[in-house]
Image (cartoon, rainbow over all chains, first blue to last red):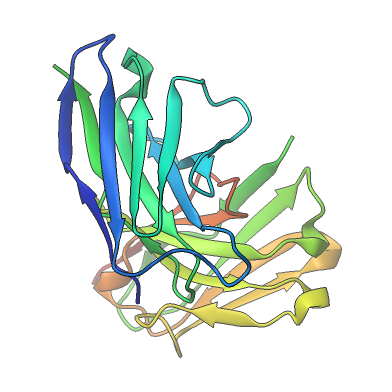
Length: 113
Length: 114
């Protein structure tokens, strides 16, 4: 199975400041169809997960443009340009380039300093 | 508007069974590959399994910890996804979500305890 490793696992941030989460996979996430199947999810406290970014850098509908995704191969990053209070929660990267199974990172908890 | 509404969770004894349902609306269910993901209390997300659309074969794949005990099925006429869970253990305790990948339900809580 593909192992997904996120860092940091805890990220205290100041409101209005940027934040960055790294996600590394144990093998390349480039599928034979040429697409890279790496996605980012947000889980606010007490809520179900919500997909923010699909296939590395595509924002889902309704996701604020302060969220952006980048990367290639095995190294990926989720960036929040200016953190807002509503961004508090746990962020997960997930791959489904090589499945079964889909595999998730351990999660990064974003909190306000 | 896409809606996924899970139901069927509850308290069950170790060794028992439970059947979860996920009522879907707002998208073309018959064409969708549907997924179950679970989350143990205070833990991260774990993929449980996925079922293809019938036009793509309708087969299901499972995570190793549930293979042989869990069965995913679908009723396209009722736009409903199911998860039959047998031989439950305390390790199966958690919130169970159905998902299209892009959309997620609110989850249903399964507690396995004596």
